[in-house]
Image (cartoon, rainbow, N blue to C red; front, side, top):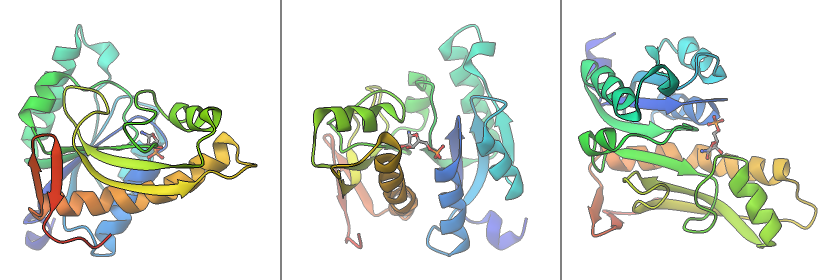
Length: 214
Ligand code: GRF
């Protein structure tokens, strides 16, 4: 690693599946839109395709599967230890399925971002594609995605950024998910850049940005 690269703030990206948001983070770094280095990719599953994306980009990977630990707290301790080893400054949950132990949330308080495929607080909870399916079933005309700070309450932390997309009459869960995903890929790296550059102020359950470029 070059001296210049190692001086960049370290990101940990936590994944469980496909990894398209992880790929978007790498792309934003390559395009000089996100000034960070992916110091570590942690997967909750050994067979997650996201791990291949991480390896293709030469990132360090770890599999920390909650089911191999006696408790969520022990898995949390392993995650914290792995992130401390590589001096992580911020964390992205990018399609990460397990609920993060409170110890991890506390150790990286206001430094963990999650992307959720709905306009929170609507359709909180549940992994993709449930929020998209619930949005379709509810008949909403607009949906989207939310990047928020992770707190102990699932999908309820301070909202950092949202993007809306239309819900079309002939949408399926797949077509709506694809439209939302394109916005996730734009918003998560942008919100990470805001966080790492110190532009985000987080107070009393809300966030403010020094100046907006959405
Ligand atoms: C995304 O829709 C994200 O919002 C949700 O899970 C999906 C992960 O997709 N939490 P990917 O693994 O990043 O492709």
